Length: 173
Length: 425
Image (cartoon, rainbow over the protein chains, first blue to last red):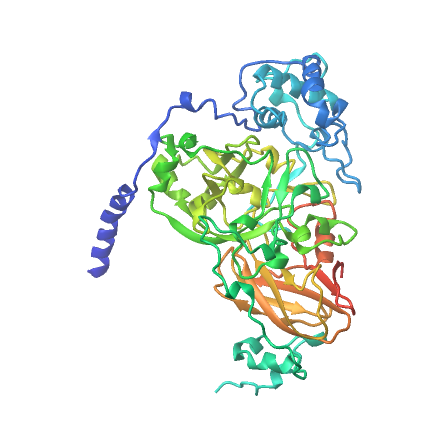
């Protein structure tokens, strides 16, 4: 008897308790979120309209990126962007976009949100597509005049696409 | 009736090279007196210092440490070997600290493009994606929610990375292990806000994003978010400081530091992880065969002796208290062992309570140094049964390219002259 009434009380109480949450959140529409919703999924979901080629990207790269990443993406002081393919299993592993990054759309995501360091989130989508194309071209993954856009970029298969093993929630040895 | 040892027998070493029973402390100070220098008294009359003969200064609105403690500073990026544009860090000076809570001004930080000056009146947290009702929360609204307070450590996944290297860096504990700190965090359980937006059953992960100029994004399993993740607003009683995420950060207990997104502005509920730059190119572990272990999110158990540690000068043979910190991202510290002979023999350390899950635990062990060479190590076991591995075991399992999550046993060598330095066992 006691148990049944307790269960009944809990069934009644549970929704009531949830309703006691303050609910101070204000509705917001997807349109109003747009300027912040800049994340791109590894399959390319979220890629915006726009286009660019490596030829266009090289000019932007020389002006805005080479000071940290070096000409041709050789790196120093910031990360190398090109080279290193085939080195990951060796004693001198070189991690670059070309040798290590598993998904091409994430190049767009990271470049747009975080680069260049002195002015992030100021590149146009066309500029980001062009820079992405240039980085891919430096790694021999696209041609100089190949157009990168929301359709073509997810189709670029990165050499290290299958190089990651998810651990969570397990443990390392 | 318990088999208590007679006083005096506790002064017999319980492990090699002078380690004494941890119970020594529980008996009070008398035993320590036995070990202390009881030399002949000589004439040294006390004088009255000037601070006792005139009024002191007026109170300050926000106080600072004594000027005599000005060596207690964070270590900044130009003292770090791996400086790169954008990335910066401040490392906690554990060699000078005690207890389990890191003062706010000394809490470590890693930033990826500077510390932003965020106006809380213009900051928002947006939760959207696979939810029934996308919502925005301003800071004042969040401050009105029912709060929770918990003690947790945060550790950068890159803490101790130099120990993967072939040469033992002759640095301080601050340089080697300074990217971990512990604090009391107060804020709103994320589960409260997720209930409010209504999570779509298809959602399995969420993406959290910072609002600074680096815009770090990390994927977090929804189950973790519903368990113990917090929107933290206060750190050790005061609002979180700008370098640690003002006006709000995500607190993801036990997970690698980078996941604890600072300056949190947005959470998107997703059906899968997003494989962002910071969970692929960074904070994954490149193993010997060239494959990378990804989403190794929880930090495994680890410990370190903070005193004596490199830079500490022993002051002659006699009694010392070995003091250190232990923690586990998977649970609670169960026990800590200390060795003075490089791991040949071990003595249980005393744990200074409270011993809390996913928080730094202070351990202490009495030691009678004979003035000769000694090799100090500590080894933690957590309540999952996990035992902190040796450096050799880590290198054998992961290789030397993993860079992150180094949690092996650290070794301090005490030389005959009393100099303490970092070595590999």
